[in-house]
Image (cartoon, rainbow, N blue to C red; front, side, top):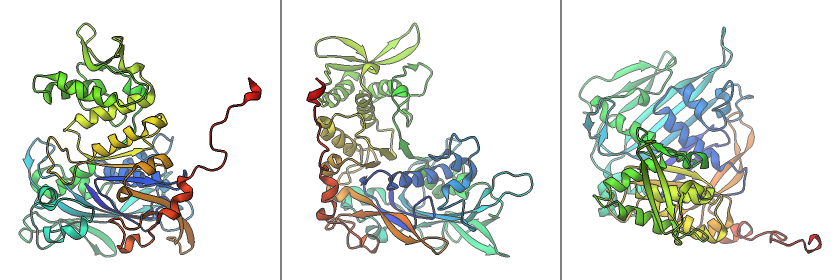
Length: 472
């Protein structure tokens, strides 16, 4: 669970500091930079599992280009003489983790703060593009006694905080950075604290972060941080992926684009149904039936032993049986979220852009309710019936804003801030509503009121639909 994010020098994010709860809605006009927050989260997730240059080329706006240039990620990257971007993430990591060899372990403590700073080296010799440089990396602990100051969103102390913030730590960090002859040296410290010598390594030529290189349980807390960041996903459900049947040999876990929907529902019905898959199918059907205009009698996965395919079928109230791929794009996305809601194996952070796309206005309350229900209930104990999931959405829809609890809202606005080169530049700021849990903190002193956002919630003149009677 990502409880706090700090970003500086990444795209149009300058000195951004924001706190998150279980569910957050970031609202604002198109072009404000809302998606750059998701890019920052995605970049941290990618850094935890691959080299820095590979991570840079997988971030939205860079991946897929013929030659990905890492300067695309820096603020004003093609003009600055010195390029630096820094990230800090405070997170609650999983207690039970598994390493790359199948061994299970527990971290020393589950509440951690991770910091990474990355620079840029111009191309030299035969190189055509530059490379990213690891300038600083650290992983420190947040003890239970400090947790209340770092988890300011409303929650139940006994049922939630005491269950997810576990362990203790004293002494040095798990990862620290020092300087030797002007060059950064990053050290790994053992989980036992002061026992054992730290393992230092020069960072100047390192192709990847230290977190990404840990694969075993010898450094179980670092591995827990890695597993947590790897669980931060950008959910971008694609109709073509959702409409694809699954082969018997395909994975049974839904991808972030919605692929393997059929296989996932088949697994959930078999495992969570405890021998009675109809119960799972009924819950998914009942949720899908909330959509106006969709006639739902039953949802099920049908096995085709001849072609060895799994396909989701919808039986309408009239008895007509159709493959679920015949649903509209919006209804398919809603179905995928219904399946995700049933899947206790899918935990972590999910970032979803504009979930209202393709949804009829009459169905917006059902969609908003669904994405909110995906998030963990912070007044209950996380578990199979309350998966430890976090959800962040962004939207430019005033209708969605009006349906979301004010405590869960952040408004994206453009402000002038000092840029890395000393000039004043336009950057994005996330502002909470007054009298919500984020206000009163120095990072949210620019809180907005309902009067401030009233123009955003009011449709402009002429926005209503009209009929051209003269054309009839």
